[in-house]
Amino acid sequence: MGAVSTSLDEEARDIFTDLGYEVSEDGEELRAERKWRTVHVTTADPEQAATHGNLRCFVTRAEQASAVRERLLAAEPDYDWAVISVEENGYQVLHPGADVLPAP
Image 1 (cartoon, rainbow, N blue to C red):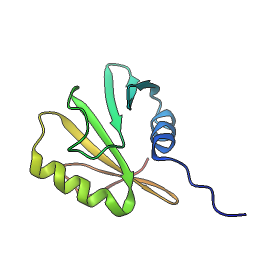
Image 2: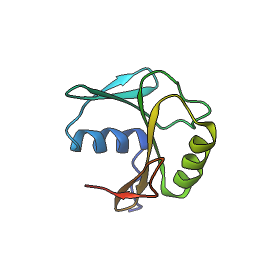
Image 3: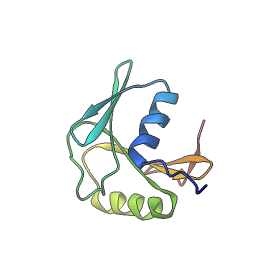
Image 4: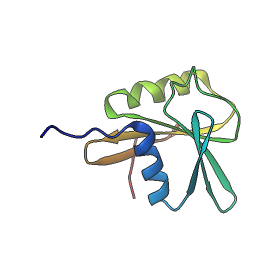
């Protein structure tokens, strides 16, 4: 039997659910809510993603994560953002001011 591939949307939902967020669909994105915080989660390229909200998270495969981070740094969007790099055995979080933070 071949390997089963999980979609990025499913990966994003699982990651934020595991972090204790209530996750719901919001158009073509996910809305992750916990306490006072709402994070708009997308698997779209930064140039194609919505720009509403103060907190945005871009979920992408590991081989594309650094390029997505660099595009966001160059674009200097008006919202706080992070990139989640999904790997075969987990994920890493890339922030604007730090290279990589390990997953909790």
